[in-house]
Figure 1 (cartoon, rainbow, N blue to C red):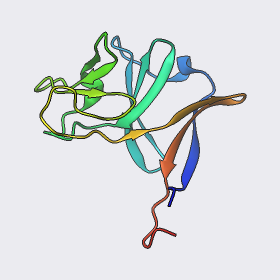
Figure 2: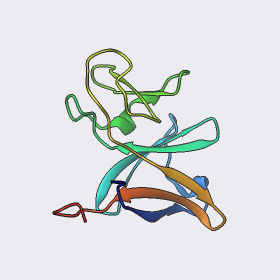
Figure 3: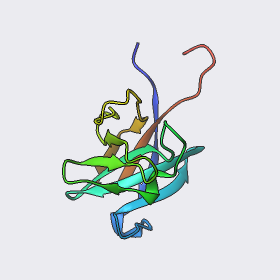
Length: 116
């Protein structure tokens, strides 16, 4: 069974987002706190906090491989899959991002009690 996504307008243009010097921004959208990363002219969305120690990922950076790096323990996560690339076994929740004619959107799963 596929998950139902609700698409939320992230920005009309990426320059509207308040990126820090590491091209990371923390936002609240669709009832979720997300970290938005800009890497090679693409936008990625993931949970705002590291799954290991809940550090704010917007305080980290994106390395040359495209992994977001936690600012506290330097755990690394693939921005597309959420997989922990440094081997600790954690998984970072990621969200799809789409560029459309009228802006950039992020897909967030609907909260359903019974999966309907």
